[in-house]
Structure formats: structure tokens, C-alpha cells
Image (cartoon, rainbow, N blue to C red; front, side, top):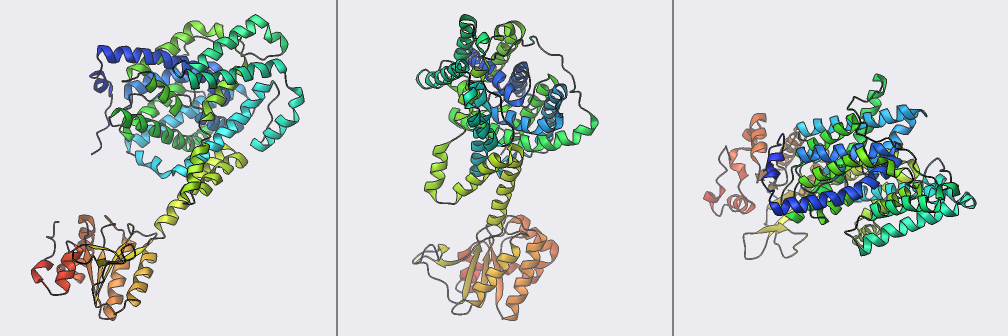
Length: 569
């Protein structure tokens, strides 16, 4: 049973704190700060907001999640995906105004947080399960390519193009002659450094190392005078908490855009949280996660930050660094706040090319070629779903690609549930076990009895299809059936459309002197049969515990075996 959502789970994880776990959490928290400070600034660039906004978001996201979250390792901070989706959404609304852009970015975080809190209150954590893995992988793959193409001009020292990914790629190719060799050298060295350090020295914060080296290189070689763009002056200090100054007319757009973003943010965070909860042997509460990530986004937006989520890379770094409780997140938050208060002047000479390299390294793992190869090898058609979702992002853009990805999921879901199968059951020789005759050819049908089992739950979208299949199987039975036994174990509950279909089926069978019985009906189905009067029409002695129970009773071998379930069962 799912645990009740706790208002503040702080008291739960504090019981786990020992001298050893505190030491481990402190080390992990410091190491994570070394990763999230440069990444937060880099992701702010993706989102189109000032670098400090990335640190505001990280500080508040980590702090609030540590108080409300159920995962001990999840690192709630800006993520590349949410930043890219935010930029795609806010850009057109801002109409070229930098001040309006920042306000809308913060407002979207608050709107996303409110939606997540509402979803947590109504226990809607299951909604994220409706995005299939192939769709999510394809969408994220396309998102990773989009981000990398947008960061490429920073590594080359050229102006960024506009339009979709293909238009921007054409612009990059056409502008290669304008490449600044110093910028290219800085970008390539930073890119190589992050990949090599991550591979051979995984415990070293590679992003922080290349960031520091990039700043030192600018100062030592005078790279700013050679055309290498730097971040420049960044406002330090913690911001005052305030409601983002967005206009009332923008609220509808903010909530509409935030709705799409939170679906992906929550799905990504839940996947990361579950992965490490399983690894360390504890459980998370999906609805608690909705509330915690929602509160984190509200706090980030009020602190002039932007959307935060639980990224897999930051969470993995937190876990590998030794994090055992949410104390690690509090330590990281403190490290980010100290950076904001005292260290921001040091980032003046940070090359934009280094930030671009950090972003590309961070999203590289999202372009999971091996997973696409696995989809191909399984031959389930998943690869085409993934490629369609990826193409949607690349051709239509991030937000329209997201809509396409969600629509693909819904289409796949509706196709599956509206195309059910009905199995004919037979008895395995020498046993009382009944199995699908199609799957077990040795299973023997019972003469005169047709035992049918719908493969999925019955409801309005597939009731007519199942009705048609049942008709066909009854008509094709050889020898003709005198009894039809319908096994309803896949349908814990049914709706009015299905009830009316069963009533029609009984009437149709009755015209051919065929009687209908039911096996394995649940309590809700029995109660609906009773309220509607259908139970009186079929009679209690036509409802059985098991297939074998029904067969023995209807064949008249053992009348006592045909006793119906008690009315309250």
C-alpha cells in the first residue's frame, strides 16, 4: 500500500543520520555543488536567462526538495531538458523584451509548481506512467540534438542561427569561415577535458575543473582581447523573494505551457528517483514527489529562478559521491548560496565556449544510441515510435514535438486497448488447469462448452470490438456450444457500455438456446450486476469461482461444485 503523503518528511530521514552518514553526505554535497554551480550557469544559458538565475534555481530547488522529497539522492536543480523547453515556450511570449523574458521564465516555474502541487493533492502521480519509454526516449534524443546544435556556435565563436534544428545546422555550416580559432581551441579543449575527466576520473567534478581552467586561461593569455566571448559581470547575492511580475493576460499561457513541461520534468525526476531508491533499498512516494518538486519550482520562481527537476546525471553524481540522505542536498544548496554571496566576481572571465562545452557534455548521454539499437533488435515497432517522436522535436520544435510525443503515446494506448483479443480456453490433459488453446495446442476443449476470456479489461472503447469477437467465436464453435463461459478476471471494473454489451450478448445467445455464465467476477462488477438487475437475469447459479468449478457444474458431474460465490464476495 502506498504511504500517506507526509507534510515534511524531514523527520523521517533525520533518523537515518549517523556520524558516518553525515560525513558521507557532507562530502557528496560539496562534490555535487562543484558540478551544479557550472551546470546551473550553463543551463541558464539554454533557458535564455542570466547565469545567476541558474544558481538561484539550484539553491532553492535543492533546499526545498530536501525538506519535502522522499528520495534521498535526487538532485533537484535546473536540467537541460526543462531549460530547453522553457526557452521554446517563453521566447515567443517575451516579444524581444529581456525583462519580460526573465519574468515569464520565473512565472512559468511558479505555474509549474502550482500544477505539480495540485496533482500531488489529488494523487495524480500515475499520470507520468502514460508516457511510453520509446516516446520519451525519442523525445529526449531529439531534445539532446537540439541543445547540442544550439550550443555549437558558442564553441565556434559565431552568431547563432534561428529556425528549427536543420536551419540552425545550415547556418553553422555556412558560417564556418567566420570561426574564431581561439574560441574553437577553448571550446574543444574544454569539451575534451570534460569527457576525459568523466571517463578516467569520474569522482572529479569535471565541469568545475574546466570552468576554473577556462577562467585562468582567459586571464593568462588575454583571450578576451582575441575575440573569445566571456560571461562578464554577474550579479551576486541572494535575490529577494517576490511574485514574478507577469501580466494577468499571460497567466493562461503560462499555465498552458507549464502543463506540457511538468509532464516531462516529473517523468524524468520519477525515473531518476526510482532508479536510486531501488539501488539503495528504499521506496519513494510518487505523490510526495509531485508535491516536493512542485514546492521546489514555486520556490525557484519566487527567487527569480526557473524550472527545476530531478536530472539523472546530477542524481547519479550525488549517489556516487556518497549521498545517503537529503542532508547532501542541503549541503549542496549551502554551497551554491555561498557561491552566490562571495564568489560571483570570479566568474567574470568565464568563456562562453566553456559553458557550451559543459552543456554538450551534460546532454550527450541523453542521445542514447544504444537504447535505439535495442528497440531495433526487439522488433516490436518501438523504434518507429521513438524515431517519430525524435523527428517531431527536430522538425517542429521542442513544444510542438512534445505535443506530438504525447499524442503518439495516446494513439498507441488507444490502439492497444481498443484492439483486444479473446482467448478460447481448454483443459490441459490430466489436470484441472485451463489455458489458452492457441498458446497450448495440447489443451483440450470441453465438448458443448465454449470458455472465452477477453485479454484486457473491458470498457467503452473496446466493448463493441469484444462483442464482435465473442459473436464470431460462438458462431464458429464446432461442435456448436450449448453453454458459453465468460472469464472476466481481466476486468476488475466495467462501465455502462460494457454492461449493456453483456446484456445484449446474453439476449443474442438466448435466441440460439445458448446460456451464458461468468467466472472470476470482482466485487465491483458483481455489485454493478446487482444494481442494474442483470444479476437477477442471469441468476446466482451462473456465477462461479473458477473455470474448473463452472465446467464441473455445467457438465453435471458434481452439482455441489457449482455453488455460486456468496453475494458479498
